[in-house]
Image (cartoon, rainbow over the protein chains, first blue to last red):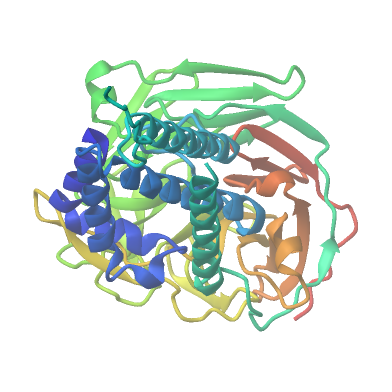
Length: 140
Length: 355
């Protein structure tokens, strides 16, 4: 949650720089007029949804969706792009190649997948989503 | 279990579909025809030698005999490769710690038999060092400069900010008198600090000509050593309008000018040797497929007597690895990639120069 909120706040504080960087991307350039607002809002919503255990599952679904988007983007760039720009930067640092990014994104997607399975199983075991069957005790 | 798998499956499909839609509608470079064709002199130029470098290497600083000099990300350091042993070595050619702190990583280095010249436009510094690492002279310039190339042992050509204006011109700098002279405005005034008209500055000692090839359009200008324009022309692609726009972004101290859209390189690197201008092009010709061009590094050749297109070389790019910098010397192409230096022997057959 801290990661999502930190990332969103950092973008909003340096909004002009973030807008400028998004405009430079050939992939999302056409949407650079509204994306600078949409991305931090999504990050804030996803981060806040993690706070409540009733809404946590939706945050995990959102995270899974975002990670699949990133994975698909990296794959398309590797297969179809004319040239591959530097894959450096971000939290991971400059040591990753495009292949490395693809593998890492896939791992994060898999982690989100597993977290979703565990989260629902936990709720199910605690009867949040599915009520346990009633047991009739006949008093004699 | 079934319902959650269905939900995950729907999300997976939706995410992939969204990315594909954005990809298809994005402005991809070289996805359409560019209005010109290429004639290949050599279609599959393979390296005669490959030497591993590392990610600290920035560009080729010079070639003398069997030694290739390379600049690194460490200020004041020069690396070199002995092509016989294929070993890479490095040393600090500037040891003055006070001076080293002033030099930024964006500096460029040129090595010749006369010594080493370090150009740091952001710090407004030019440092001359001889091959015995004796610090010869430090030149402190008044204005920022973005390009510099030696044109004699005592002078260099440079592209620098025009005093009082938000644009750049070519000048000659005399290192003996420490004076700037011979202003030459060879690019259009855009008032963006010279960003859109940014280009590649080179010198050919055999013809005593300087060339300036713009990165984001097909403009070429040749000047003599006094920066007087002798010839103007275009690369073979049809991109006469600049492919980049700029905008001002606020910073803590004032503002900076940066590109307001994806960088669309037309010409990525250039070099001159023996009366031929070699330009590493990022523009696909109409007789090339997008896939084939994406897996190639294409160098177009122009004669410097009339800037006629002579033909092209195609260097296969395994894994879409792009040339970062290249030099032509001793009948060879010395091409620097991210982690490799590759040397290609130029074809020996004569290139037809027609007027």
